[in-house]
Amino acid sequence: MKNYVILMLLYLMTTACCSSSDSNPTPVPTPTPTVYEPKVMLLKVNYLTNAFEGAVEIPLEKKSSTFTLRKEYQEPSDIGNIKLFHKETDQLLFDASIIWMGKGRISYPQFIAPDNFERVAQPNPIYPVNGFKMLILFDSFFVEPDLTQAWARVQTVMLAREYLNANPEQQVNVYLHQPSADVGDPEDWRWIFFLKN
Image 1: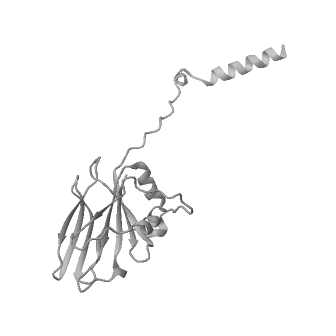
Image 2: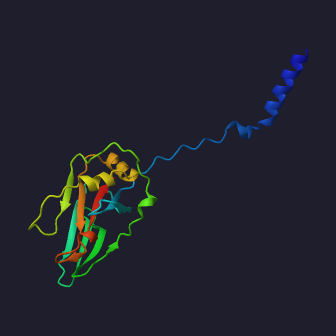
């Protein structure tokens, strides 16, 4: 009988706690799916030492399934300029001056320091399936560069690996920025790698 009374009390307590408005419990919110935001990542590597010197992500204003660079090049008689655009959306990705017998500078984008990027300590090497596409300012005297050492530094950046995994068929665009005209100083030169997610 004691068990019967205890069971009855438990039943009354549980039914008394729930009013008719509680019969429709608050639904558990469903997670919002991740929205794909198209971006381009630029990575800067020292020409002589192959040291990774920074990177930046640039969100694209419109989605595009292809990735082509368009250049606007003003040859330096004194001061020149190079602008690189995402051709499909006409969005500026890179802007730098080139100075005759001097040293220009990159005015856009502002690269984030390398220590702000997570690195893979012992990475399994990954390479773009379709290789690299060099952006050439002048065709004369062009020799296809060996990008092996520079790419070895880029592919240790976790975010760069994510871009390559998200878009494995891409051909990685590469530009060698030489901020001085005439003979130039290779110590000032930088590889700029362009990846699209």
